[in-house]
Length: 230
Image (cartoon, rainbow, N blue to C red; front, side, top):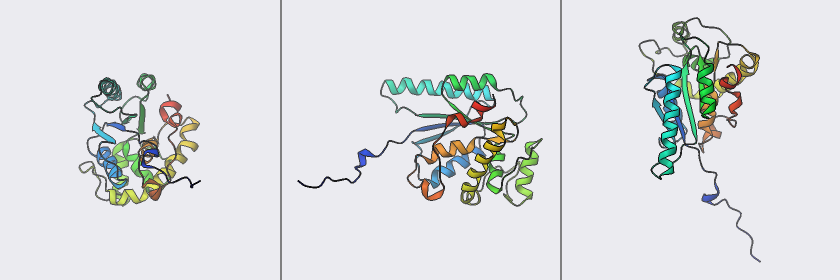
């Protein structure tokens, strides 16, 4: 009797998740996420990144939930492929921290919130080292990124992340964000916080080359701030 062919057939590889990301920001977040996807070799059809029409957390989540329901209707009719993961990326800057109603709607509709406090720039800051420093304004955080030489060209008027600097430091950012969650956020502390590493984890799981760049972990939704702090 001949030997069985144990080589993995193309059809046996686990299917990839389609991910839809709605962001508050129109420059930094979108450029950063697209830069990550490009370096991981992910097509635009697999990770869809859109600028939200709304700028407040409630409006962004309402918009995301509406898009999810529309996708489900189209997929049921065979007019679109079903999207597996739905994410909203937004900051808390200048807003009350009571997002309980927004978080509850996200939970009820099974969408994920990648919240950063005070802003997405804090996630960028974690690429350059661990900190639990509190920032009373986003401007101070942006100034630190520029004046410390981390992102020397980044400013209020030039919110374009330099991915040639940031991407090689991604393993450090992931490690620092996980440490912050374990030693700070999960202990009930507020600012600073970010869940952007969990979004990056979700994206990285879809890439064949992700293991060559950093060591992603399987997304555990219960680790998100939306399940811890609200």
